[in-house]
Image (cartoon, rainbow, N blue to C red):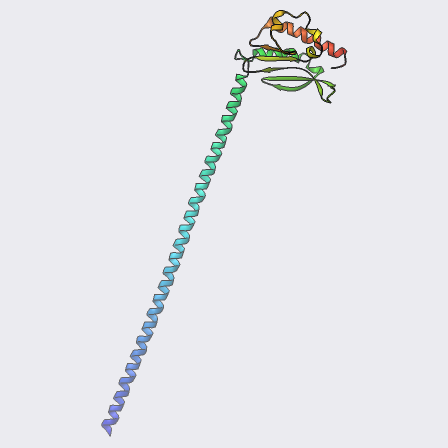
Length: 216
């Protein structure tokens, strides 16, 4: 009976030890599994952070590229504006008359400027000078008196009173008449002081005529 009891007790101890070992092994496995999951989560978090960092870097690069492109576009626009300004300047220079300078235009403008205080200056630019009267015409607009404009081939001088009052042209020299195109326009390729003096006198007569008739 003692031997059987001892055997039963030994068997119980062995079973308990086995059960304890199994529990310990299960706990160890659980800890290992938890550790692996934690490590996996940390790895995933690190990967996510790396992706976010890469995305931020890509965005920063794109922003820098956009800024560079914007700067280049602005520079191109500035260059285009400068080119246009240069072209405008060249056009003005080429419009100085056939002699390649502004002396002809300036001399003709000075003839009209002597009467400007009694008229209305509509245009006054490096290649155009235009005068209206203070009187309204039948069309409801101010009467045009005279103008000068520098073109590529020649400089033109317009005098409207000789169109409405052609008798004012009586007595002008054949040389000045040769410069006429149409009924009220005179064209000059160069500065011609003698003809300009005659044209100045004609302009004075035109001004006096229109002043007397109430058209100025």
